[in-house]
Length: 271
Image (cartoon, rainbow, N blue to C red):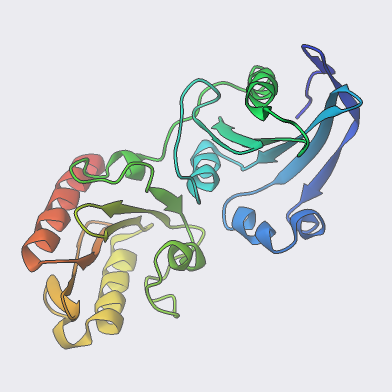
C-alpha cells in the first residue's frame, strides 16, 4: 500500500520493508502466528521522522478482508475509541486501528515524552490514504447486548485462538478451521462466556455440536444444559449451520437464558 511521502511535518524514510506469511517470523517471531490465523497477506513496515530525535514506525497489515482486519484488532484489545479508522486503541506509545482490510499500528520512539498527539496525527494521515470503511463481522453484531462486557468480543477462525482467550480442551473438538467464523465474548455477572460459530453446512455444525458435548459434558451429551464443573454450567445448541455455546455460567437458568437469547438473534441473522 503506497503511503504519502509526507504527513504534515513527518517525512517517510526510504522504502517500506515487506514481510509475507513466510517471512513475517523474521520480523515479529512467534507473534506471526496471530496474523497467520486470519487471512493475512503481508505487512509493510515504514519509518517516518519529524526531526532527528522524533520518529515513528508504521506497520500496515493487509488482512485480506474487513472481517479479519477487525478480528486481529479485537484479538487482545481492552478498549476502543472512534475517530481514527473504523476504531482504534492506544496503549502507551502504540496506537492501532483497523480500516477496510487493513490493520495499522503506529509506534512512537520510546523517548517521546507525550506520544499521544504524535500517534494520532500520523495515524489520521495514514487512514486518509487507505480505502475507507470497515464492517464488523455479522456474528459480532449478533451478540446479545444484555450483560455483554464491553470490548470483550473476539472474532476468530481457529482453535488456538479460542484457547488463547478461553481454554476449552486441547483437541479441536469444534472442528474449527479457516472456513469457520467464530466470535467469543464475556458476560456479566461473573465470567460467563458465549461462543457463536458459523459453519459452511448444517451437517458440519451438527457434527461439531455432538463432538463438543461428547468431549465437554460426556455424561449429559443429549441435553442442552449441564453442569461441567462444580457450580459451572455449560449450554449448547444450534440453529442451522450456526452453533451456540455458553461456558462457565453460574446457574443453569442463566446459561439457558443466554443460550436462548443468542439463538434468537442468530435466527434473525440467518433469515
